Length: 315
Picture 1 (cartoon, one colour):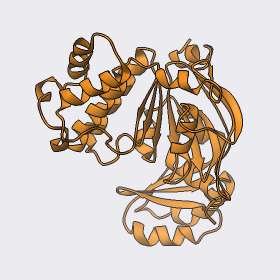
Picture 2 (cartoon, helix red, strand yellow):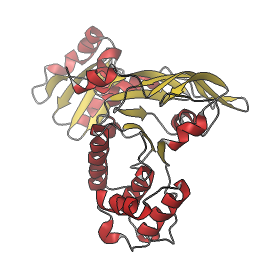
Picture 3 (spheres, rainbow, N blue to C red):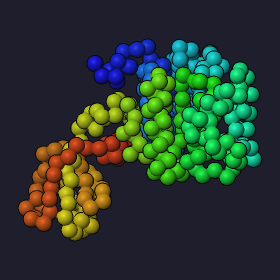
Picture 4 (cartoon, rainbow, N blue to C red):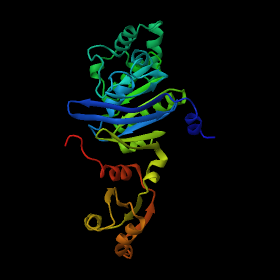
């Protein structure tokens, strides 16, 4: 039995149905359902303004929905939101700690706000767990994006939450810091912490056990990350060789081809109908300078395909 299947059999940490949030005449989140097993890393993937942040805030009790029901950590998301908040660590999109305090002072202040016991020991453990100890006397305002990210995550973990909600946590940080961040996330998941991560980075989505695609307030599809593309039934070919710019333009104008995307020195050519796609690319398959290879459709191709059918809720 795989770790993922073992998690799925446990009582879910989050089980919400029909969550809806309306601002004025605009439905920001439209009947959203979500089931998250314990210890999972669950990704919310979608464009900016798609409702990811609003959904996270309703789940953890920071926002009251206009409709829907469910539980988070065993408590009712509407009637027992105060209890949920005590067991959740929430990392916002923007750095929200105090830039004129040191790293250690920030963590101590957060510990005071939570009313935690053994404050000094907790702060020391937090500093060491994410490699912040040597910088503990550095002002937060002088930190780079990656170090601010570590500090924010340390602050989220001080009260030892069972659930972490991370809202676009790696925006604006370098690739090395992003990789180290994800290593930390998986370490926490292995310890039984459940983690919801919102992102619009496709390469980060593959780090998640499960993914929900969200666009303009609606959930388009969800499931194990490795199964999303196959659920959609999208076929994709990779083509390598010279003249890819001209080839891309020609393919985009060919019936049977839904999308063409450049990936370094190759093109990914996709369509929902395998037979129609193969007929569309057939005239170019005989060109000896071009190398064509059938590949498994990725999350990016899947998301672009799904987005074609969704109406912008700002319209």
